[in-house]
Image 1: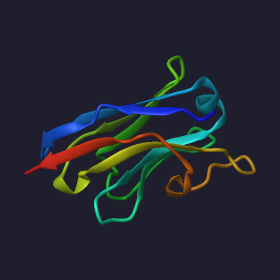
Image 2 (image 1 turned 90 degrees about the vertical axis):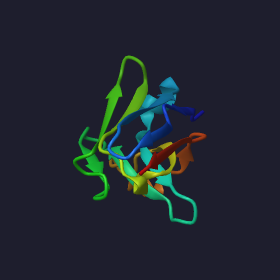
Image 3 (image 1 turned 120 degrees about the horizontal axis):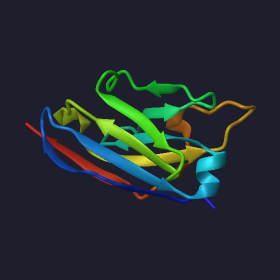
Length: 124
């Protein structure tokens, strides 16, 4: 069973930082590709960051150089460190997962399993 529980969202001023956490079940963490998505009101869902099957990371252009995805294997936890936050980063952030296909991870925007989400609000 896929279990993803996010935490760490909140309100911050522009330029501030937040760290999101995603606690996953052992099964999910060990067998699924994992990453972060976000969705702002009235906008399309956007893949933010993810790990590929070889452990490499990928980021949306809009967050490169500001966000860092990491993981703690001992805690089955995924993180998203968000620095230099901008008002346009305001969105509901979701931890997401999907099985690998042919040994590779699908694009994070196509991940089919989401947590409940955590709201991030960045004010000017």
